[in-house]
Image (cartoon, rainbow, N blue to C red; front, side, top):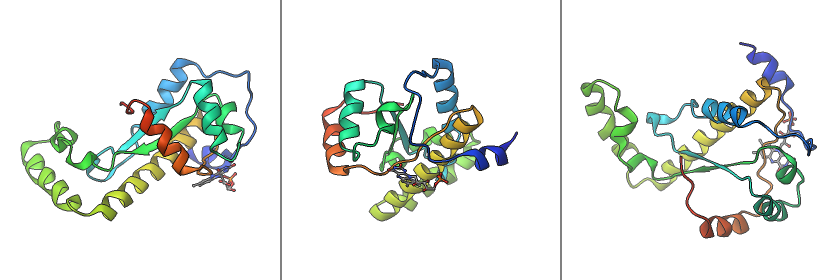
Amino acid sequence: MNVPAAIQNRRAVKNFDLDHKMTKKERETLLALALLSPTAFNIQNWRFVVVDDPEQREKIRAASWDQAQVTDASLLIILCADLKAWKKEPIRYWHSSPESVQKFMVPAIQQYYDGLVQVQRDEAMRSCGIAAQTLMLAAQSMGYDSCPMDGFDFEADRKRGRRSPPARR
Ligand SMILES: Cc1cc2nc3c(=O)[nH]c(=O)nc-3n(C[C@H](O)[C@H](O)[C@H](O)COP(=O)(O)O)c2cc1C
């Protein structure tokens, strides 16, 4: 368990090997590790959108100040959040807990977020930040460099997302 090595070796890398392809198993391992990231009340409000289509990647690159990582990395993950995850059948986040825990947690979730738009958004940012770091350190431990990015034209990406089918988990 060499977490310090992953932390020390991780750098925001700009140049990726165009010829390298991650295997399906490596991608699944990485995403499975990311899904173990903690979230408040276990609401799992992150959504990981993997973009494989080269044409989509080119368009996203164009809306990302032409940053080469967007097309050149062997894996591109757009980290999104469901701001309303807290109210979508919250019992499912606690289904394997004793009934007494469920009875406490499910109303507590509702009470914590209901009507509080800023709290819902802050929670998304916290969950995604932690998940992003989990992804990068897990990738590093698997021998992969990464680059966190928010150098986007957000409006252009948001419009493109609206035209695409919703992300699924
Ligand atoms: C939220 C966030 C957004 C970033 N956006 C970009 C980006 O758009 N392009 C880029 O090349 N690096 C980006 N970076 C990488 C930072 O420039 C980099 O993490 C920082 O300079 C420290 O270097 P290091 O990560 O190699 O230690 C971003 C980092 C963070 C945390």
